[in-house]
Length: 285
Image (cartoon, rainbow, N blue to C red):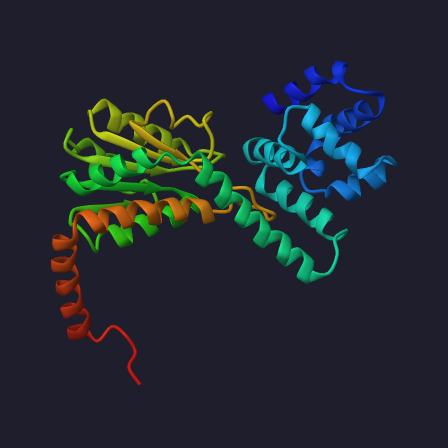
């Protein structure tokens, strides 16, 4: 709840109108995370500009950034059912469907832009090199994070061999116990972080394997365990994370890997295509 603590500490320096907004946020932070600035202004009988200025005075880069932080607290502390109740309550107050679709798409765009601005090209290059040169690559993503893990694993297997994806703890610890310093583990996990993801990263680290984390912020428990890490923006208007930015980072890594390992990739793809034709996997009219 560090976000709420920070808001509380900033209140003494606010104007009278801004204090009204700040106290309301502290008392109704779960709902505010999903309200528009206009709706909040109408409820408090203040101007929309007062809402926006208050967000800046509280230390956020605008009202959307404040909501991003509050939704992060919800992701960490509130159950999925509660998130659905909150989102549903606010959606009933919103406008036409086309407006909501537009907000979702703009939010995805904002996630991509935020992630791009904090992305370090040198880290992307190092990770691509690690994944290309490692003897074996294990990729872990539990629950909804499995989407990110499977995207990386499926495409990486086109370029190189010895790639294993785990989306449950079945045989996971046995595999990690066999890993060596020449192997790499990629862990994708977002708040609320699964215990298996964190402990797997810790176990791999203890075996001197290279650990790569794809997560959502610098307070993630994976940051301290990873040799290389990416933080991506996952803000969403529904009950779970948006993985648009995470998939974009994965795509960037894969692009560099494919470029560096063209010969091996071509050889691998030729073999795969031969099997595809032999097994008649795809539909032909």
